[in-house]
Amino acid sequence: MRGIYLFNAAIMSYPQPLYEQTMSWVQDTRFAVPVYLLQGEGDEHTLTSLVREYFAAIEAPAKDLVLLPGGGHCVVLNQPEVFLAALRACQAQMGSITG
Image 1 (cartoon, rainbow, N blue to C red):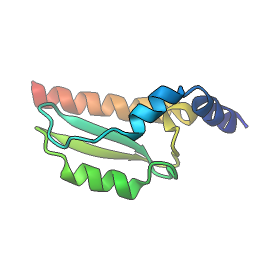
Image 2: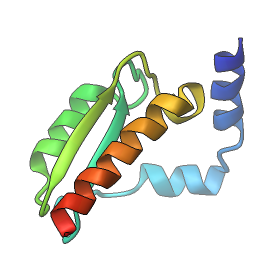
Image 3: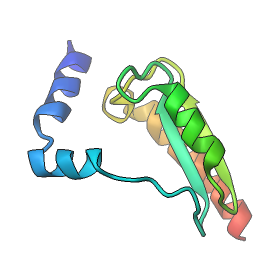
Image 4: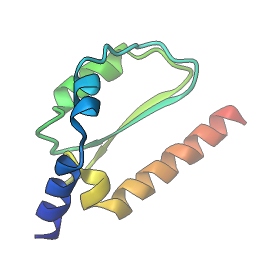
């Protein structure tokens, strides 16, 4: 029940103007900084196949796609400990790249 509540709370707090701006965004694929994508493995809203496609097109000094097992669209809310551990691992990896 907690997961369902957190998922719905996140969706209900998304302002309409921000939603419209997000949906009209055209993504760039060239970055001057390392890029890390953290994706819930079971995300049914932002399909992993689309994330993989975008990730493949990214040009960056370093990049990584981290699939979080058991995670869905709101993995940061539903599995904060898993998300934080993955984020810290990315931060450590970035630190080893930048020196």
